[in-house]
Picture (spheres, rainbow, N blue to C red):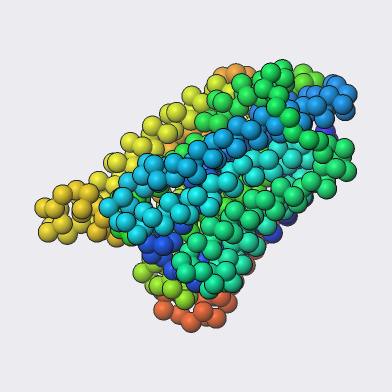
Length: 535
């Protein structure tokens, strides 16, 4: 595939994902305004994070990265009838397995809640809410995985826009749940659970017409013994872990956050929304668009094309992720105050969420690079190397969680609390969730460092000319942007006590000034848009 079509695919996927992420932001603003940060919202975010973790693995991770190379190979080499047969067998097998998994998780929801929120077991109201919400949100896993299957098939035919637009349905349902359905239920927070359940069904239905136009709308059938299905499953099992390290880290963070002060789950979840924009719109988009291209280059044994496509992905990622990191770190408080501080979301919640955003945003370049590096291994059917890197990152994250948490506790806990039992003390000191964000960010750099090292050792990637100039321009652009944002933060230091309209126009000024400065310096130092067409 020529690079312009890769760029078109990226722009198509990114623009549709941008719509979804903006609506996701409106969704979280709605939830914050209606419900605030409390026991009920903590229960919802836990109940949503567990099946959503599975969504990330399937929709943006393991399933797609295992399915797309095999599907592309059959599409390139075999007949359309064989492609339809593969589609039917994968849909039937995946659907059958996940139907059983979802049913078991609904039945054993109390046990699942106990594992992931041990801190809520001693709070009957919070624990009961979590269990009820889990039973509503878990079937989402089945529906969203079938959506990922049809999305992977559409991506292989270069239909990137529709799959990227599909998550809009979830956000619209949750916004409706927050503003409309919650007022009609005895337990308002359950409206969000029902919204997630409805969105799962609607997302599957949304993609069926596009599959029908490609003549890929088939009845699912059990095909466990189909050779290509077995290939996908063999690649998927290690890929499940390798592509989901950051999500597994988030689940561990969920367990630890349940031991911290009430509201910690919500503050971490709100911070995750800010990372969704650069990661979802560009990191995941690049990984999704580049995988079919890398697979084709590998099938055709086009080593030069493979290397160029990967180089293009790495450069484009840095161009977006590095300024996004600095922007999020410096504008964390203005962003949180402007978007969330209203209704039930107080200045204290703004300060706590700012901690999470600042810590997690440090890892944005690493999170995004992982999304681009992983397809380089999966396109070559190498699923073991990412698992090795993932295990190292996961162990590092767990160790760093403990080190950072105990360090902050020692620094911040008043002397009277230090004399109390540790778990009791942890649940009373605000701000300790900062440690979880710091650990996740550092672990992500360990992950990307190991992937990069093993990629070079395998001699499958040769850096293309022009990297020193690219990094110099990137550094100068970011330095100028940081100077402008620091000046703005010095001039407008406190955002928690401003009127909403004052926050909005000041934030718009800072974002526009910072972004314009970065782009202007890039072009002034020789960057041209045509460089994005080289792959």
